Each structure stands twice: as structure tokens, then as C-alpha cells.
Image 1 (cartoon, rainbow, N blue to C red):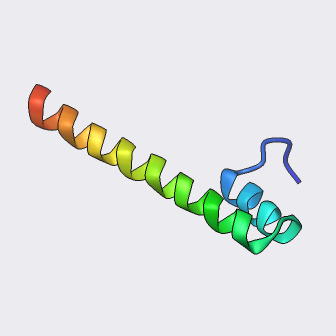
Image 2: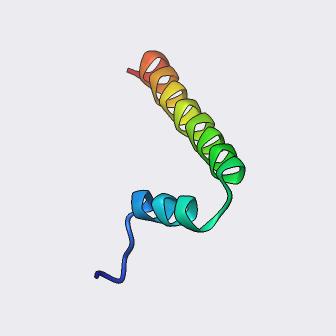
Length: 49
């Protein structure tokens, strides 16, 4: 195993070790962050391209 663990495997580990409800909350937060980053990059491209 490598020392640098990919975030995906961290999420899998969390899913296995924590309750389902908490995992769903984590996924929702992650999705929110990801979509905000995508929107931000789109906005930046649109305004500064």
C-alpha cells in the first residue's frame, strides 16, 4: 500500500467504519464542494476567457 491514500479509498474506509447516515452526510458535503468548484471554474472561464 502506498503512503499517499487516494481520497476515494478514504471515503470507502469511512463508509466501512462509520454509520451509514454519517457517510451519506459526508458524500452530500463532498458533492456540494465539487459542484461549487465546477461552477466556479465555469464562471472563471466565462468571465476571463
